[in-house]
Amino acid sequence: MPSAAAGTSFLLEHLAVPRRLPRVWFFVGERLTPLDGTFLELEEVDESAHMHTGAILVFDPLPDGAPPSYEEVCRSLESRLGQLPRYRQRLSEPHTGGLSWPEWQDDVEFDVRRHVARAALPAPGGDRELAEWSSGFFSQRLDRHRPLWEMALVEGLAAGRWAIATKTHHCMVDGVGSVDVGHMLLDATADAAPAARSSANGGTGADEPSPSLAAERPAPIARGSLARLAHAWAGLLPAETIRGAARMGASGMLHPREALANARAAIDVIVRDELRGAPHTSLNVPIGTRRRFDVVRVPLADLKAIKDSLGGTVNDVVLAVTAAGLRGLLEARGEELPAAGLRAMVPINVRAASEHFALGNRVSSLYVELPLAEADLVGRYRETVARSQALKSEGRQAAGTNAVIELAGLAPPVLHATMARALYATRLFNVTITNVPGPQQTLYAHGAPLREIHPLVPLAAEHALGVAIVSYDGTVFFGVVADRDVVPDLDVMLDALGASVEELLAVARAAG
Image (cartoon, rainbow, N blue to C red; front, top):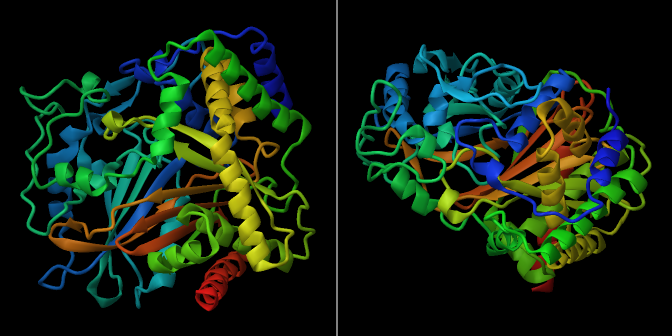
């Protein structure tokens, strides 16, 4: 098994001379890009890594009190798949390696019903039953011989509710800024007209661009469907992320000074891995393939009240309360809290607005040291805010991560796997925390209002816990996934996370 040091040392050798860092591999048509291939490679080097992202979408019952039928879900999905042709395509080879990347090719045997299952929760169909079913759903890898996504219609939720569970491989979507198959079913109004039916070959019709152009020029979208949803999700991209992508040179034409700056930033990332690795914790040990998944719900207004009183942003509040949950878990285990902090990888979106409906990955990362050893809750919050804002204002770390990824992309697949492993090694970070600001208006499917989104972040090898956060329609949902055996005490973290929100809110109200 290649070590993280081996991978980063290889990269360091290639940083000696500043060079233009091409971005053309983001737009190579039907061939898998190196960044997308990373998530296939992580699964191939360790069977415990599950590189799919996903969500559980919970809906109110339809007017007749029942969920939509399985056939209705399949027909609706099939009518809209032309807007994301990749969902009818599979990899030319199920594994990476050699001197070239696999290609995306049409699945001539595609049948939407092979990707959509039907499930029913046991009584009483409450949160516990849904979390247990979701844990099993997210524990299963996707079949590499088919298009890399699955969905399930889940019935039997309490009070007549129903759910759509989605699972899409990370090599297709980044989980931060792109639209996956679950969002295909969502409308901005309850009475939205059905989308136009896809052509038989999986394309989008004679008047629409071919699938190979979909990533650069999205197909026309039926009014009342994804077009309105796009407006609902407007604002997903933070302005500073777009500006950062522009500074990195989205066209691939970097000035030598910019190339030198990016190379230096990349060296910073590598030195952090080589010389000042993330602390060892009981969350960074070999894991298995079985997952535990659960969700914590927090009113968005509460997080806003905390940041208005104590400073920072909603994202800073999210990091602080997640840190409180992690502190509670390690403390309950009698574990020494890392003095320098627990290192979180925080993915950030570098997807341009024009690429909003493009598949593939447009993501970089920040590495935030969460001050778990700070005993005072407010002091810990303020230190988290200070560290987060320092990284964002500096802007150097995200650029360095981008440069490392781009340099890794210059290597052929046979060598790239070593570097992919290094980029997700435990020496670089302890836990992944991703936060996606979603629409603050009610969305619908089949005319039923969407009430909850329970998001999933993938777990790489030796990373036993991850947190995905999404805000939707006034509520923030913390989706927490963990290895079932390494983290049997996940409830401790969930309770500590929720309690920290209440404590910070009490401080905020007292101060205001």
